[in-house]
Length: 397
Ligand SMILES: Cc1cc2nc3c(=O)[nH]c(=O)nc-3n(C[C@H](O)[C@H](O)[C@H](O)COP(=O)(O)OP(=O)(O)OC[C@H]3O[C@@H](n4cnc5c(N)ncnc54)[C@H](O)[C@@H]3O)c2cc1C
Image (cartoon, rainbow, N blue to C red; front, side, top):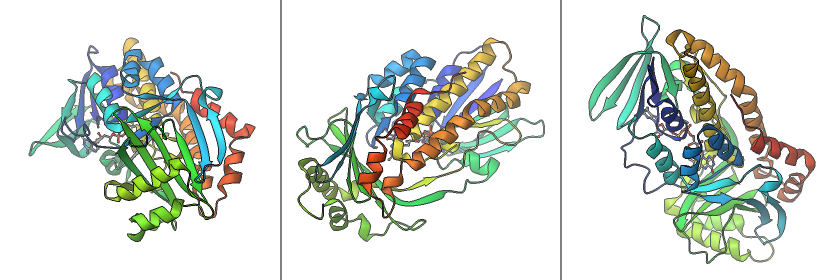
């Protein structure tokens, strides 16, 4: 049984580690970046309690390796930029365990470290096709040379949001734009204790978000509405525009927001820009030998911090399923299409729920939104019940 994983990101590493050293299974994980990439820069992530729960159930040691590089995410507070608190939720009310706050580079380091030996770095997949025998042929560039792998029984596409695998086997997904600019920044912690656990601040629909991560750093993100489908204007990427977005019309920003606004304006050159967008989910290709995981399967809006979180959930389910079939002596080439169908049956409703809920929770970010009324609705029972479902109801195999 020959398995190739494209991408040693969040999902790819988890699956690679689970398949290591299984008799009769030959696994290769191809990763385009060099082993040293992602080690110094990047941004921060808040990873949901549901991912922590899924990882602990799937592979306790791997879960501990990730926790060791993170801070716990225990609460979610929402205020106005003048300091008026609207919402202050201990996650223990809606989750069985904490989430985490981590640098992206550290999450990759933990996951890649635990899958070491299986990952071929500097190997960029460029072409995937079915050969006549019904198996896959994969071509990749490695150190300037074109190489190929033939007779592949299962391809795990974990190559992220701009997945070449998905583009070649199913066509590039149609992105749905929601009319919100989003930016992210990782800065040294000079806040003097003002910023710690996960918080958000609104001025109209313009939102700031920040939390502290290990390594004396603070992760800062901001959003503001733009016309749906429009590019983010050059002027909107500059300090005066950004300062005005978050400065309250009456009164001064709170000390937290003053520090955030000054820090963003002093670091505009280091900002990572994106737009709020999502793509329709796809779990397998039509011929049933390609399994899509994480962002390659479903790009979702980042409002509830579920991108990496769902990549972890996907990978734990895929890995548990593959291992279950292997233990039963049923992991062979002929079984692959049915196995991928089983994966889709297990995951589709959960992913649909998370995507829909993430979009609904973005209401306060849209043009014309009232963040006070929108945030107060999030304190009511229906939203809290959805949050509990999000953080507690992981998929099990
Ligand atoms: C700035 C930023 C902040 C974010 N914040 C959060 C957050 O707070 N919480 C959260 O849950 N999510 C967050 N996300 C989303 C999250 O990072 C992604 O959803 C997650 O990384 C998806 O995991 P993945 O395994 O699908 O893909 P990735 O982690 O993106 O991994 C894909 C891997 O495939 C490799 N690759 C790509 N193409 C090829 C190829 N052709 N050949 C070989 N290798 C290839 C890439 O180099 C990469 O290593 C954030 C994203 C960004 C950009």
